Image (cartoon, rainbow, N blue to C red; front, side, top):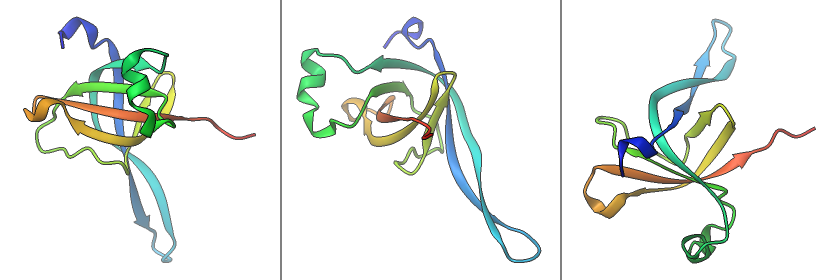
Length: 110
């Protein structure tokens, strides 16, 4: 993956539960990392046809591994176009250099 193709800035966002002094808990977003990524939207080519098991995924993000950060499906990807729920995380070719994430776009209701 060339550096020029990674032209989308994304934030990996996690949830953190905080209790106030009265014992009520609230969930807040915490930015775990901000990185450059390659983004590919869903379209009708052969690669996306082979991903039929992940039919709900709308976008693919590929970015470099971040030391000491484990990307999980409980996280969310945020960028200028919206928020994406992570459905699948995979180490590209098992080398520990790039992470490939399949994600579903979150549409606000209402």
